[in-house]
Image 1: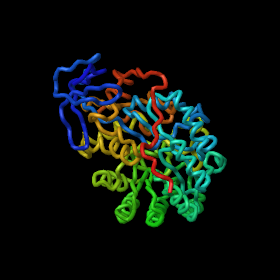
Image 2 (image 1 turned 45 degrees about the horizontal axis):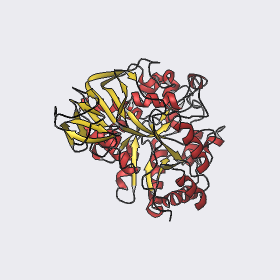
Image 3 (image 1 turned 120 degrees about the horizontal axis):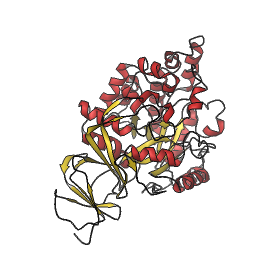
Image 4 (image 1 turned 135 degrees about the horizontal axis):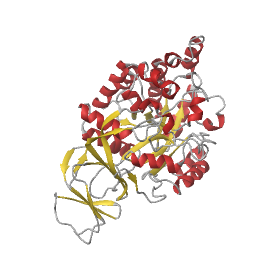
Length: 466
């Protein structure tokens, strides 16, 4: 035990994938230096009292839409990373949808520079593959992208520049995108809904009440998702990509994932809104503020998602945080067919899983795996995801005896006024403090992060371009 530690976190229970144990955490130079026996003497410049709390590795949210810098009315880097750290999220992965789309090495560099001077949490950049030639794909890899992203759906009308290189409704293009991304060794994340089936069901829904939440689900039934996922998994047996299926919503898709288990390198995620709500009563209550793509579905789908988390079929929970302004949503009030899809989630992710622990659905080691260890492994962040010596001291401290509740408008996200799905919902458990690189950045309900304290995360081993 050489020299003084910067800070020692005292009195907590430390959570890892393998279990929970009482330990004090000695931190030096932004990393965990030692795990000490409770109360063990240590020379430290500072002590943080964590009595009664559990310490988890910092949550890593791999699916976030901040939308900066193009849409500051929806969210800024400062506002959304502040919401992240208040929610116990120490790192977020930003999706490529902005104006213009992040579909080249140059666009990745420009956007990363914008984040770097403003982010309160660590951040990584996800790229649209854009042109699929080797030079363009390699330029994206060299710019530090953590992963690629594609949609199997068509470009939304009026948002063509936001989706250029991202929307690939043609099966041949999807296959070639998987192959191109596979050559970098980086994961490729896919929003999977069949464009052809979406067209079919949209036509069939003509004449249905646009004010009804059921109309949205009729236009995008679970079959659209499960067919697209099955097609992708079949193609990936040949393409060989590190495939990741975004925001799984349905029992049908869970069955597809299980059927293809072991056929290629793939993983899948779901989101709090699919785990907590149903498309009938809950979305109807929230109105257009509850519209997300793919839609929130029925009770049997929700039950299947919880089962898939428990048995490892789905290995990640992410927010798909989509910041829209109140004006964005209100312009389509009463019309589910035109409302912008998305809901804020950065401050909801950790409380959702803590509440699942209180219900007995998950254990605390499950939470550490789903929110930290698996993201760090899948996306090549080898010093993150564990509270152990040598790992970064990004920490989420939680109080299982506390509770979380957000009256409408009370969140830190700039999208606070459209969080109708979560208004006044009670979660058992709360985020008590968040540490970033060994320093508290949120504690006692207050932000205490230094400006621009977040680091740009790039894969440690990006792989040889082959």
